[in-house]
Length: 508
Image (cartoon, rainbow, N blue to C red; front, top):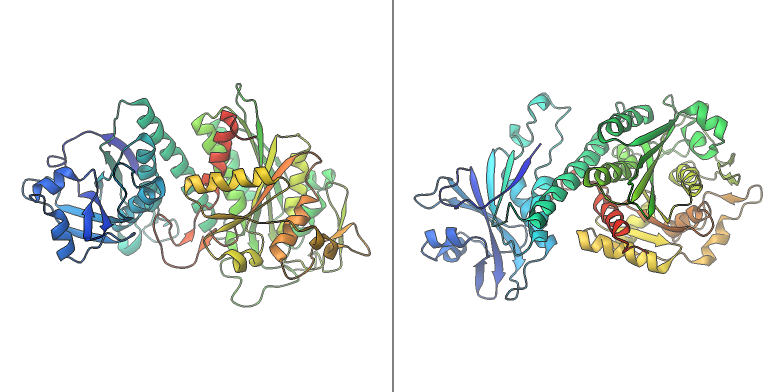
């Protein structure tokens, strides 16, 4: 686990494997960013010229390595691109700093200690750099031969120690920003670990056991409904989806409460630990990454723990709807009708539209507690990926102002999202001749149809938003910024920010 500290130590005498500095893209070539004054002075003010000679431009994500000047204890200077040069005193923005720190941390795999001399004009900048470094240093190696030694790519371990220079260790705001970065970064990485775990080890019961361990460690209340309790309670959606698997489903309720809370935020996560499509089997080439179909539940789990670690003055309840969707003689079939926890009946027209079935039961369960707002998170539809690509999640809601607030929160923490509508005319496509509603509707606008389905299971008068993270939840391409290949932890930072806003009374 990567350590994160603040320091006011002088750069030349700092013992580290590398000093990280920022370089921006100016109109006439690379520009050394604030924070690197001591390094620039050691090059007689010519660091920008040296970097340009080496081909650096300051473009976002660019990395340039050069030997440290004479007299420096650290042997290496790593210059990372920040993108366009900022206007005077404007700063570079949290996301630019977060991405630069993540790129640098990835470039320093194998190093034990690095000092980050990036521009810190306020405490939020320190938090962004710290968060980016922690997320960029992530590696999932539990199933590799040297996994016990945490050795990642090329046998190199992730960066072990990050020192933030230019901050104020005794300043409460800076310390709080770093503490927040550690809590959010570590819990987001926990979500990544869960997403990356193979489904033969992470089935519903195993996920529930991990949640129980975390609840004990962080003083959370937890309730786990097994298949017997689900049957007794009438959770037909979760039971139906899990009926084809040898691994029985679970519904986990994880609760963080604050004695000073004035708001209650409920989070619901889709937790399909493996999705074969069921009887409506997925075609070849679409199964290999389906261990990631529990990314929503992982995000909710991580958020509740992060809220506890941060001591937020808000009550946060996480509902993890866990099941494995498999084909077998006992699996739910197209044409079957399920009676949901709400009492409504659903005609199953496609067993690969299973996420909305488990979410429906969990949404209704969450609604019974009358929270101030419910947010569900799910890798729900391929249609949303077609609409928004692989890096942006869609937001739907039954309240336009709340949808806007969620979008603003995501933007603030650096997660790409886009508000999506819930067109009423699409609801008719889910009319069923034999049940209250079908789990499929019109093919066009499928992501919106799924949102309309979920809306049916939100309690009356409760503000609700739906996050479809199908695109950004799992990165099948190469790493970029602070985002690794594999599980990304998408939506964790947005959910944490929503909890913070609810705690401060800024989320209506």
